[in-house]
Length: 336
Image 1 (tube, helix red, strand yellow):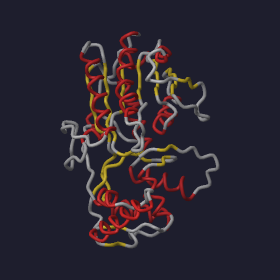
Image 2 (cartoon, rainbow, N blue to C red):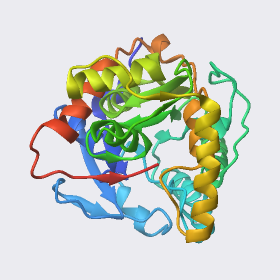
Image 3 (spheres, helix red, strand yellow):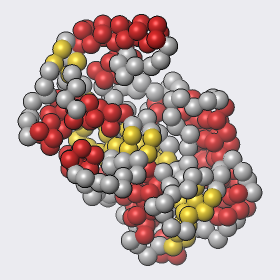
């Protein structure tokens, strides 16, 4: 891969640097010789010299003056966001404001973290050419933001570099999303496998995603779009047995029930949640998602990038950190 000359004189503005992915990226950038500044709407005790920045406020973005590259990790992403207009305010109008700031200050490099959510319930092995088929506001607004960044890059294609990274579900130490919830059930001995477990789930370990973002700083002018997935994909049998091996030294998946039983229990839970007027850990939708295949392909390997951590080791590190080791100063991040 040919490295852009601008890479050696780069000053990075990391927006959303206090989040789950942002803190890992900052740790990597700190170890390099690249100059950087960290911005976020939330304060973090883990990060020194972090500055307040709200992508919804154009004047706030004046703080990135002097940067030569913007990495925008800021997003509204959880399912329970209210009002729903927050998705558009942050993810879409935020992209408008970031692009305007880049134009204003002559910044020609933007790295934007999008999501495979733009594909919706996509066919197995969907790659970067997959059609957008989002089913929620998160996927919709990430797709709209991509279009805004593409317009910015197309205004000066010979000089502007745009990298759009679409990660699948990201997991790792400190994350409190769906993967953590699954691992927590396994660690507590409350996990029940529904179905044959042959369905595959694309996943991404946070250290590897941050490493790829760092790697993409060297890309030359142009439009670069990548799904990010750690390969090979695990099927559910492999994921569960691997987790149980790390936690208990056992390699089986534990209790298994037929898929139709799981779905029936999910409907019972739906009814109970309606009567109780509060959500329950089990639902028919969650059972169906669990038994479904969510698998993507990626052209990341074409960039010469090599993930620093295998998916198996990333899973083991997460399990040890969360459920085996004593970590008194844990920082947690709520995601989906």
